[in-house]
Length: 393
Image 1 (cartoon, rainbow, N blue to C red):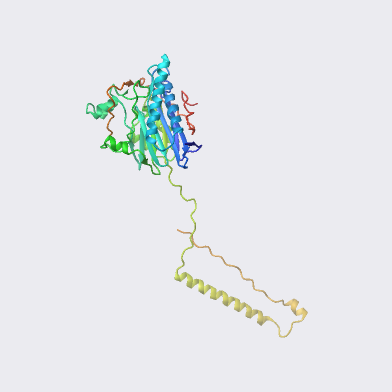
Image 2: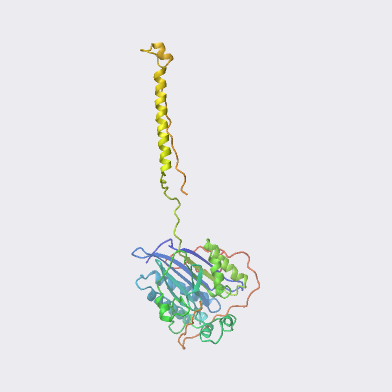
């Protein structure tokens, strides 16, 4: 793909470390391209790091860099296969780095990837970072969490309400950096009753003007409900909407890092000026116009008669000519302007030998946020440049 400076979608993003005082271990990137055939494309990724002493942010940075560069170097012939290969490669890179550096041992990361080629959506996820679709005012989580509680809900062991406060709420069943080969999830779940095969077949989903794709880390979704996300995004200013959602999560405790990327399909541009059409004239209008023409001709004839009657008989003398010059009738051009035209989602069942990772946030802080998080200037590049460790100044 060929990198470009401007995306064909509206893009807004924000990241915040939260209110607990921990490092920001989230990373994200948005890249814009066009294909050799001239089709525009956008790739977005959010990654949430796992591991203490800054190891999580290292893993998330590797995930974003590796996956973004793999997508940038690929073509669009097989998007799903390309996403799977990129995610598996990033997981292996994290695992190798973890083994090479003892202080990074056990690190891992989640990822939520969305690749929009023209108006078609392709996704891949690992872990509990989510992807939502907003369409026609409704919101649906189209990714599937890879967590213990999601499987427990699926198997009827706990209810969805119990899952939110369950001690195992942040036990992740799949993550990048696992010693075993990770299995990227390419199910795109549109209905609660879908089979896995049906969800797979949804890849390449057609997007329509006004649709939005939202990627986020669990720092948002742990504290803000899906319907609240939909309400927050139902505004014209997408950047302010994203920051308001971050601020809402912080207002409710902000116990984890919060990262959001939103991609919106533009609405059709309304015509700034329409061509004015000449209105059709009624028979009455034409009758009035004809009468006006007749009256105007009569006035000309009458004026000519007055000129003739006012001249003396015979040839006028020079004095007569000077004192009584020939009269000229001037007619004004008349112009008339016409009047103006008037979901409940099933869980993943990963292989039983897949290792588990616990992503445990710190205790909820009572510190209230001071204003909105600082806006982020999303850099649209072939691979990410916006992977700084902390909040932006």
